[in-house]
Length: 117
Image 1 (cartoon, rainbow, N blue to C red):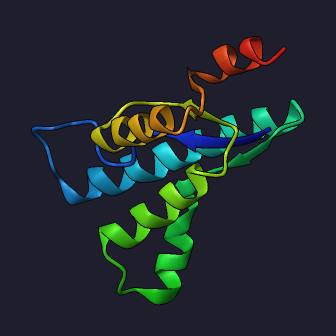
Image 2 (cartoon, rainbow, N blue to C red):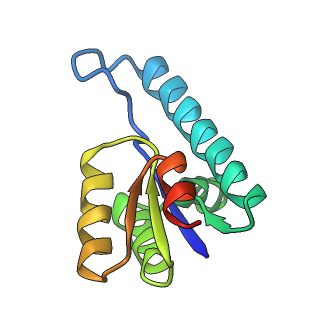
């Protein structure tokens, strides 16, 4: 299955928007999504981690949030499942879109793996 890996990107701390904390949280969140994608890949599926589009942004440097969102949503539309690693407002929008497309949404890799046996 093609599996969309969704997770929070921004800092989990609403009250402390310290720039260095936002950056380290972002890196930590992307790392966790990649780790979970590796578990899914080892189980024989094909994960897509939309958070990795930051690499395209590093090359282009002038994209705005909608550019990233459009790429992710485009890939979501061709996936067979969505796995939520952590919640955010963006992940909730992605889950709503997946539901509209009748793409199953699993909360956690364990639930996905158990649900696809």
